[in-house]
Length: 121
Image (cartoon, rainbow, N blue to C red; front, side):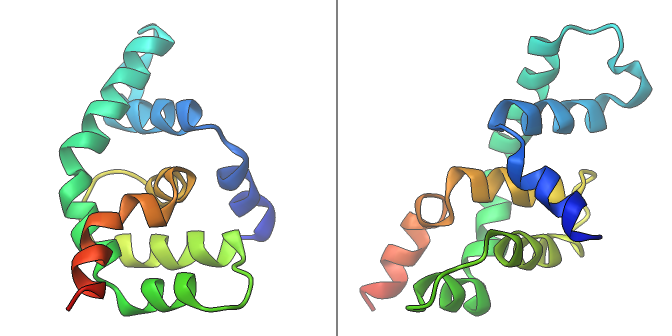
């Protein structure tokens, strides 16, 4: 995927990403369902899969190292690293859409409970 396409994921709002997930779930049946209903479906999917996503993303040493390094972090690099982790998972949703949503939330926030346990060991 080229940088322009990746930037599109970074620039989308949380609502747009949830809508994209809802559309992927509904497929061609998504129309004429209203936008709020589609976003709600996307949000439900994300919340239902949150723990599985956390387990995959937050337990990865590379993600932890990238975000805890002293150098500035490139959002595209983080997005692609997270999408690479999600790609092998059979989740039925574009790994880039999910990665963008997770990075939009913030990985420190998303992974807080797992990283807190890890850092206190």
